[in-house]
Length: 391
Image (tube, rainbow, N blue to C red; front, side):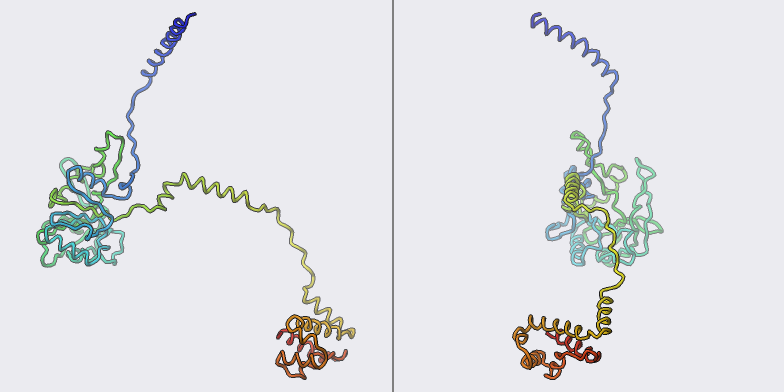
């Protein structure tokens, strides 16, 4: 069979087998688009105002985000807007005064009341105090917020309501609330505006990127509710598109150790298991427990005391004295070899000079007591033990 004929046969077999399989696959399978919600990455993982910032940038507005308010770096201008998600109690008094002075020149400041889980006795901060806002004894309560395309909507459910008693130089442009307190108040100070809200949860959001084609549409995922978009646009209206918007989100990026713990576990968990396995392999093997040794019927002290009483009973008291004297002379040879090398009265004089004892007392201690005199034996043994301890 020629090569050309062989390839024609192979091609025919592939057509006979492949065409039916392709038809069967197309008839039995259906193309389905699946949307996968990926976790936030980068700044979106720690900045709750990231979605709002991206939406404003898409509208041609200059936006800067920061974890904490930093007036020297920000260099605020009269037409700027500052959205302060940070707890106002953390704003020091000099910063609060500088912010209010900037508002008086035409700035727009948005801030919220302290969270409801915070202690009622905790200070609310100098910024709210200067504005005449009182949050003491107020609790959380939802407020109905309905728009034409989104009826039955409620807002401000997780924030603390407040009351307003503005000082001189500040006037209330608009209040929104009920008998349980306000959820929103727009205050005018000079040429600027201060918006106080009980809750800013509607401004937060987590972006979800599905694919490259859908990336642009995902920027407004955190503000997907129509009511949220309308409310956010109303709040940002005073200086909208006139200056820079500063978003102070009040949180910090995760630390290196938290990233290693939560995101690097596929690396450190196997390493930890390998280390534990190596330690187990190198550890000393322990067998079964050994039985406890049999306890003696008498202690060592009882044996010594019984031996001494036996020697005393049979008239061997000089042996006890001799053992104590030898122990004293052994230590004397280690501590004062010159005195130990002497004998007689010279040794007694040297020991008395060394211990600062009377000559007669040392001489008495070194004399062998009579075998029947138990009192003399005890006295000389006591003196020898004292002399030995003093060396």
